[in-house]
Length: 201
Image 1 (cartoon, rainbow, N blue to C red):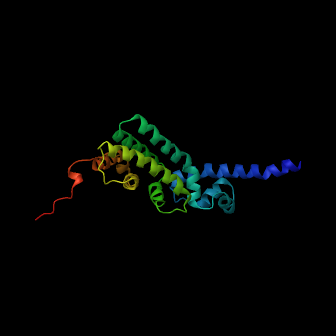
Image 2 (cartoon, rainbow, N blue to C red):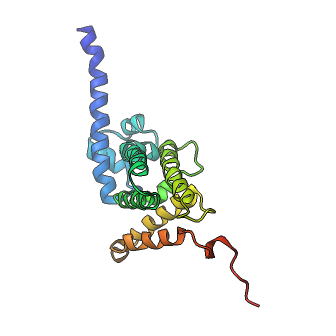
């Protein structure tokens, strides 16, 4: 009986964790990444203190929701890098990244906020993604398909910018792929991008 009693609180805690996470996914899909955590707790049927015991910050909750997605994207980069031509691999990964970022309103801004926030729970997952896109970028640069002055942070920032722009208006959402294509064209290597612009006399 004592062993059973000892296990009960842990089982309850696990159920609370899973219920909060399931409700948070729905609420954040409805309201975006700045959704009310009080609303999440209320709809999950737990107190705000219980929510904070499981997820001490908004970023901790987002990290739990997005961890699998971010891990999948990191693995996807490895697959694409080994099976597609360099520029195609980079383009396909960015397309999948931007499409996924559109699932939650405000996610591109939340991701960008982690660039230098080492203490954010999202930082490690986002760092893994930046390293993944960095490997694809390096392959494309080695193949002479992307200008050499571009960094992984540049690409990551531009992809998030496309995601942010696309969530501002439905008409822009429909043009997300076109906007990303423009970014990819801008990353392309050419003689013109390898030298400074001429200054008018």
